[in-house]
Length: 235
Image (cartoon, rainbow, N blue to C red):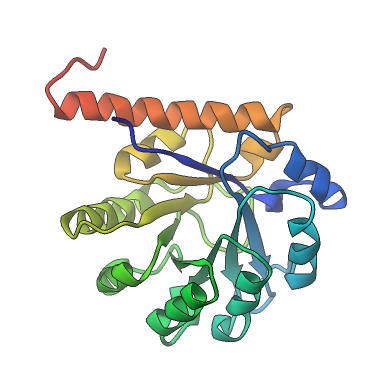
């Protein structure tokens, strides 16, 4: 059976003058709406904050996947849970006590996600995964959209997937950065099951169809791998 796949378009690649319309454009095709929050401190870019998230939350029923690329997430992350985010992910590099913040987020009614940036090893955080619902592996350097996918980052995904499977952990492994038609299959085969896609969705003529195509590619790759592992044909 093919595992379910999460497709999360990133509004970082959307038209900020039409955010509500851009959210509506992927309704029925996207599972989550990925909201990149950047503070011009943890990363050099500056995007949106709670006020915009609150406004956009009123415009769409798509669950929000808030990715906080900010300093001091302990101070700010619970606010996104209170605004109705479905999943709130913060960076390991910005938090002294990730487990404590994960507990706070869950207590506030949201899923808790841990992100690791391009240059951060995954191994020190593997033992923390039981406290999280999502592990976000950056496949670019956090802070800017439109970067080229870095396939070498998939080693982190493989390591995390092996650890999660060995421990029977109920956790999503999400990838963010350069996910498109020509990269999503490799990410799925590495063990990712949630995919953030920016320009691949919002740069397309039909964003909803782009989401459906990405899902189909990921599902097909996993199905082929499952058949191969079970000794079946892959043609």
